[in-house]
Structures are given as C-alpha cells and as structure tokens.
Length: 126
Image (cartoon, rainbow, N blue to C red; front, side, top):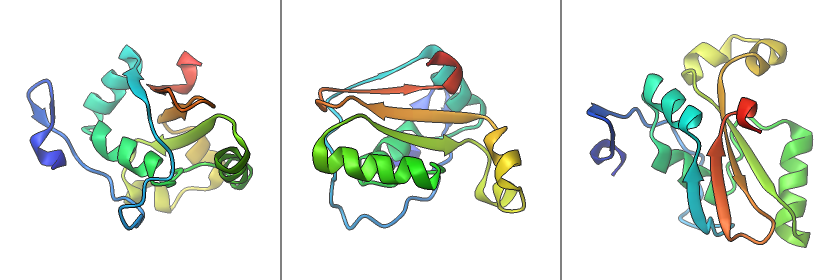
C-alpha cells in the first residue's frame, strides 16, 4: 500500500514495521504533521503511513527503554504516547552507538492523552 502513496512526485521508501498482527493498540484520532516533519520524510523518502501504522500498533521505533515503559503505561492508565523514528536506514543505524543514534535526524509521532489527535513532528518543533 505504501508504494502507492506519494509525497510530491517521489515514491516513498517504507521502513520495516514490527509485527503487530493487525492489532491496533491506540487510536490516532485526527492526524496532523508539521511542515518540517513532512520535509524530512520527503528528503529521506520515508512513508508517513507506515510510521503511523507502526505507532498505532505499539512499535515505538527508536524510543529509549524509559520512553517505551512510559508509552506502555500511558496506554494502560492514560497519557501521551510518543514514538521516535530515525530517518536513516536500519543498516546505517546498526553500527552506531546510542549516542550517535540520538544525533541522527528523527521524526516523532505524538498521540495526545485523549487519543483525539496525533501529530507528526520533529524534535525541533516541540
């Protein structure tokens, strides 16, 4: 499906998703994106729909272990849910230290505590 989505005229590169067995863990509500996030996705040819699907299924991307625990607790007790997706390929990220990974460009997917809105943004937008 992602190959059919286009941002501008370029076909987007899909990033692999963790298996979610089609089980949506959180509703996204109304989806918005900042211009800087869209520009970053276009530059790295990433598929927005894939990132949203990963987030909705509980794949928090490159979130820290603490952020992962916070997201899981937010789903159970209420709270914002934040995924971090690095825009470099998995192969490029594989050989990096965690400090190097944190310095690479990222897109955040943030769902508000009431699940009425999800925003795709860059850390600089926050």
